Image (cartoon, rainbow, N blue to C red; front, side, top):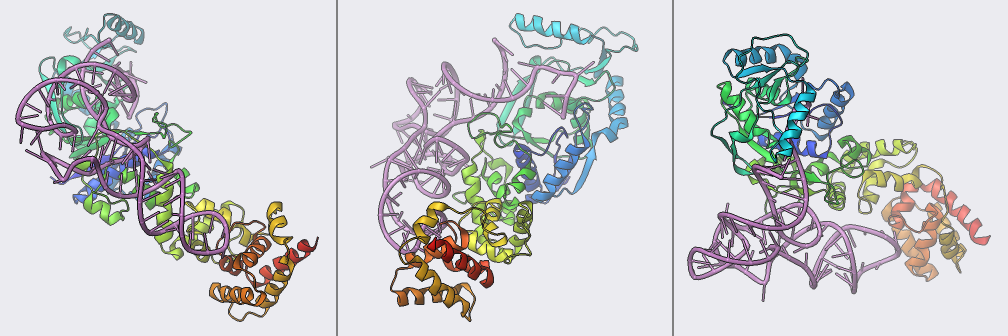
Length: 467
RNA sequence: GCUCCCUUCGUCUAGCGGUCCAGGACGUCGCCCUCUCAAGGCGAAAACACGAGUUCGAUUCUCGUAGGGAGCGCCA
């Protein structure tokens, strides 16, 4: 049997960071073992599932490059199959109909709690052998073994043993005829030939019940790997205010998919001291058995650092379209300004995200919006600033080599001729071109503005310096 | 309440009984470089939750305690 994993989100929201990492680990494990990765949408919750959420999950997977070999499959399209398996279990005496109302069940739980026990179903209908009857409360329950225990070797948590006495007879088919989660996953995982179930560790408690269903169906039990949770920066459960936004939000915030993947793969897994992993390295080195057992916190500072590593090392030409996308989001026209690839080179050492990069690049695609008056006072109205600017204007107007190197050489000449330090030249020019005293190297700042625009801005700055 | 899981620097982690007065990375701090801001280089501070036990020897194994988390649904 070949190696098969699956990612099985329920479409009740976007693909968030925890889901993305689960998907990544499933995908990596499948690729590493040369197996298949299957995508299955668990949409049996009719109340909460939406088409938008399905699309958001698909978009997120696509953006991250986590391509499934099969699917997406939808549980709602497999209803006949669940019904057939339910019947099979019923016929085999492994399941039975029960008729308690929700109120009765609630009272049952409350009573159990009061007695210091787990709030479980008491199995009232288990051995009554009542003939089937139509009833709005009718549910099919699993006849869980009452003796012995369930043992499984979790690939990340290790050996876990569970007394059957702790388990109750869970609902397999709801009163509306839809299968419950615990039933549908087992049927699906069997039918789809899943050999390794990789999922969040909030599911370890479900595993023994599911294993019992596998046994009841005489199906081979897959191996399990339960991943620790990802917490927010404050150690609390991830919420919308920190990481629990959809992965597509990370694109809008200027992160690269590869950087996010790299960050995620290191959250709970490592390979010696290595921090940067290409996709190929991840596939080659990843092993689900090496995953950590404890929860980890999401750290935006490290994500930012990683993102910058990719910004600095990726081909600027490859990054250019993505930067253009961000420029457009700011209402700027990438064609009315410098080549985005050159902007990447000028700014990649100074920002951590493409969003920041686009914001900083504004100065080359639109007129100066706001002047930093302190900068104007300090550098433009400084002693000799106007003379320096006039000299620079003349030099740039006749400069034959309009390139960062050419501009740099021109400024050095200026420095020698006027007998002033670089700072006395670069800062007034910087304020003239950008309106602020912070920007990339002065030669790049000027070069990217383009000669005409640079001269125009210097002219204007000379005016202001006399004001 | 019950069951299960987890516990190394602020954070992510290395460590699979001696190699550890615990290594790397992010972050923080300092110095250098420098036209600003960064980037980069160098350096510093910073952790084995606690208590027993096993052992010649525990960060590493076992058991408790404490703390954290998950689940106990006709939600997944």
